[in-house]
Length: 450
Image (tube, rainbow, N blue to C red; front, side, top):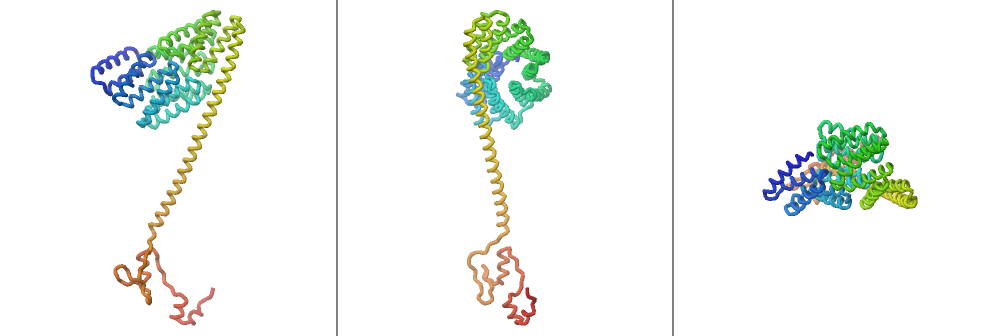
């Protein structure tokens, strides 16, 4: 969002501060925190922290959840993953208590970004798909759903599953081109460019990076501009144009330092250091690569630590200091081994969770089917009982004619009494004894024998 629009929001905030603090103030502070997040994260953090203080005193838990989510994103960008996770959990807890599917989806999206930043792509995908499910259930707009597809595509691109990445981006592109959401289109173009880089179609990649950069510069998205400049730097490095690559990387680093994005600083320092090594500017290369390595180790990002170690080995080989090159090579081997072990453990943990989830789902389905079967049997039993009338207790019967006395004192034939008090029906015949009594033995002897 352009700075003039941020200034307009801040003017509204000043007017709200003249009134007693309430919900409107919390909403405005959250809106400003979110708007400033990528252009001035320090200011965004101040606004979000003010919302936390306000909501703790006055309530408004939904606004508190939003501020926690914003703070989680800011902590992520500064490289504090532990703090980012803590804010995400708080946001999720509040949203779950409120049964706010939109808030839960937002928290899942931030969880996904934290895992993605640490190279845990499988976990990131789990959270993105859960965010997508919740948004679909909540009837979210198409733009919100398309944002999930951008993140899904970015994860698949990182995993080098480019067909899946492209199909996800195509879904998002149709939606955003229809809605005219320029901010989201910039993210989409940036990620499509990254796919073309992986496909080694560099001209196409440059075109999409340029589209993303034009929008981001127009919107004043400093973090986005820095990220796209970095990608353009890598692209020109691949083309062998080190001077152009260096220009893009330096501009990117200046922006990352301005907004205090440690992850961006670390990665860009390593990239510039690699260019300086290629250009023979070895002392400058050593300073920058060492700085990048130090930051990645503090952030505990193994992927980027490996990148920095590879570049510092190249540096000391170029300097002719083979002892240091060998020492860092050993560190690299250890780091790669640890990284592979972490990935293996993460995969095993993921498979275990998947197994337990599927097991619970199957058990729940069996339980559901048993309940259905039991319910059907109960229905059948109720139907049967509804057609049954029972005779119970003692009732008087004549010892001679066998008539039965009813509750009103009248004597009835026993078959009439039973018919009235049950669903039994009678048909009449003669037993052999009565047959003889009425017609004699001769009549019985004339009957056919079976």
